[in-house]
Amino acid sequence: MSEMKPAEAAADDQDWAAAKAFFDNLKTKVPRPPKPQYAVTIAVSSRTLFNMVAERKIYEEEGVENYVAFQLEHESEPLKPGAAFPFVKALMNVNSRLRELYPESEELFDIVLMTNNHAQVGVRLINSINHYGLTIERFCMTGGKSPIGYLKAYMTNLYLSKDSEKVTEAIDEGIAAATMFLPETESNLCDTQLRVAFDGDAVLFSDESEIIVKQHGLDRFFEHEKQFENKPLAQVRHGCSSARLNSGAREREAAFHDESRAGPLKCFLEALGKLQRKFYAKNQRMDCPIRTFLVTARSAASSGARVLKTLRSWGLEIDEALFLAGAPKGPLLQKIKPHIFFDDQMFHIEGAQELGTISAHVPYGIGQKYHKGKLIEQPEKKN
Image: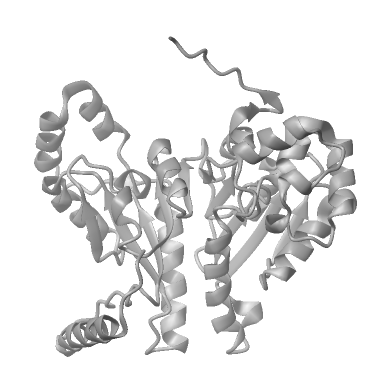
């Protein structure tokens, strides 16, 4: 995004101040959205916020006109909660706590409904949002067009969707994004604390180490992590990471991945940490309504130090770090009960779903070419 000139920025601030003053003078108990440049903006699609499986079936089988007609006919009926619904409710709880401590602060979560739905469907979405008491004031309805081009304009920190292609497109644009999945069974989630669980490699960190595992096995991976224990994960170049790799392997790695990047969700962890520190500043560390978890298949003794040192080098904290040494993540996640769990590998997502965890797939890195450790055969290209 291009930077605004000082004069343009000043004019923008004046316009925003005038608009805010107008709304502040209106008598309402509804909290006004924070200014985007201060907010942590979470963009959710309508199909992640609400369960629209039946409506989607009408769209796919009967076409857009019948779909819109159905939505208009049922617009007074609230939609059922979807995968992102508990997460959004938890975000709102954090906002309430922040407003108690910092009444004038605009460093809050701002939830944006980002959907390619037709505007005619908007009434049912608004009615559903009001029915559940959700504070969502910003809408972007693109009438069948991809909403990805609007994400940067909304200063989005995280985009959640049911459409994996749109999520991949958003990640390619440098925006944290994930494809959400409903669990197979429901579980009771904490209603006073937002709990977010992250996998490490290719989610918070680059997939540099994941490439070593997939292409050269665990022994080489352990050796590699020990050798580069004091090098943050996002800063080691694949072409230089191992003298043992031949030039062909280095070229393939370099071609597959931009090794200088961190994982797609690092920026979201940074945003969570920024809000956590506001509670710490008020001596509420032990009563903070945000809790973060690192849930990784790494072994602690063999490859854990580099992960923790990388987070330290970034100035980031994680509340709980859980090293599973290859054990299934589902049972542990069942105990944590996160409002959302991010992982780059679908077999971890599937295992978490089976045990009732709301999961979000991050389609990034070399893990997309493998399933349960085996290379996925790619279809041959036709001439």
